[in-house]
Length: 540
Image (cartoon, rainbow, N blue to C red; front, side, top):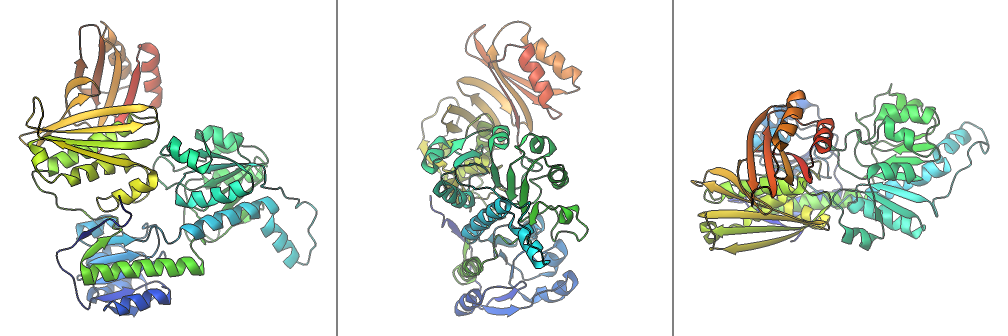
């Protein structure tokens, strides 16, 4: 798989007009113009001002300052492409852009070095009290007393989220002979060994690390990940920095922990609300280093992202190529589409059944399906695996590059031979701890069904919420977990059972109407002799 994965639009647009709404490095402007595009720059526009002018442009380039709202998008009657010179697209209404058929692209690789170096700078600033010393000196003081720092060399660094930016920080840490712990559910053992780091859970990391740096996307799972409870269990000498996304650290809890002396220091480059409000309590915390989202603010990064987005715009309008799109939807062959969507669900299901990072994704297309072009089936399966690993949408365009970055290998197989069904798709999710295989079919090419889970035949409609249990087939088992679910006011919408022989090993799949709290899961584990239990949430 290549990071240059792309698809081709129907036709190019010659002489397209492009509006640059935020400051862009001159190199980017030069590339746009040399590519035959008409370029105009108007920065600092309000929403109302942008709405007035956007209607005459085919493309729009922004950074983080301009908010591309639904109102702006609807006013952009000619807009075909919006480019974010950077990674995050929080300032662009992706749903509205998708609804209106506007492609949104970003530049995911231009900021990597600068972001990693800024995290390192924050680590050193926290370790040596740089900002407090500077403030004291400029106030006419000689503030040596009370500003004794600590060395990073020989200490333990905890890394939350092991992507390309974090890899830069880790290289610096290894040069300082630091011991590196990593919490990343998607990091494979092979990749961890290559990096020379040790994998652990988030609680082990927060209690053992001397320094912590955050490099994970902001997702429902990571929001508030560093909360009051975890801060209270950190070493009193610990220091934590976040140059990734605001909201991963509970800001109120962090301020309280610093003021109470629960941890030694912290550094933030990102915040829940940006710009940081003037009355934010964070501004008054003495042992907190604050920078105004400077992670990508280097001359080199500005030039790289400007070059990247400019080249993508030229490819789009001149050559009809779409690259690094974050919202595009490809129209699939209607004969393949139901199986592609099914493969995405099966892969998401297998991933949630796996406690370790996915190393290999195996996708097989069988029967009549194998006679067709099924490459989108594998890409959709990748989407299912990667769905929770990024803060922006995974598409058929960017899925291969994201998979490559995560170390996920896609293996595809086709055969016209199949038993029992006219067509079938089989998805295998392999980790260091083993493999889960799930098979499905589409009755009349439209009605998706799960027909096998691991070695058990089953007939299951695609559920939004699924409780999957493997256990010895014995009388009374259904009553045990049924009673617990009833007491928790969780309704069972459907039940499917698979087994190979009487009183042997069995699998039961319960479709639930309500979410499943962790406490209820633990009750079922204790009350019934369950070998394996998985609570799975799917987008169907």
